Image (cartoon, rainbow, N blue to C red; front, side, top):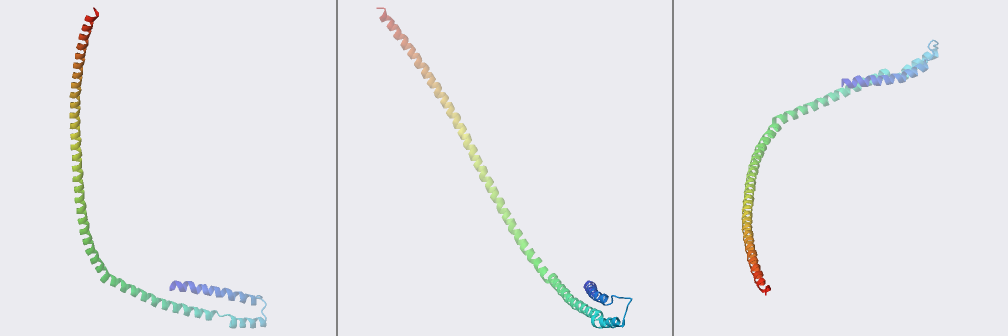
Length: 189
């Protein structure tokens, strides 16, 4: 309110003065030469056109009314705010805190249950993976053992085939050498 009156009142006064001073200076342009006509015009001017005292009174009245009404309105607003804050602190805040505590404890319990379930699922998944890894390792070991057995069997069969081949070659040599000996008997005739 004080800021309003300190800004508004001088601004209105300065504006009014600038308008009236210009008119006054035009009328009284000749300072040294005052004739009775000019004096009469000056009096008429001050009575008819110089409204400074009236306007200043109106401005003061307007500022006073504005400050009083605004002050009462601001006081009511502040009282309402005080009442709202008090009600919030006394009623709403404890209710909100209690609801938050209730919901927070329930949420915490749910979170713990979900965490336990996830932990169990992770353990099961770990066990399944471990079991699958063990099965894969067992299969690999079985395959390796089977392969080694197969390779030994192949080596044995190859040795047998080589032995049979060597024996067959030996028999064929003996057979061809006997055939050559018999042919040699017939050639000499």
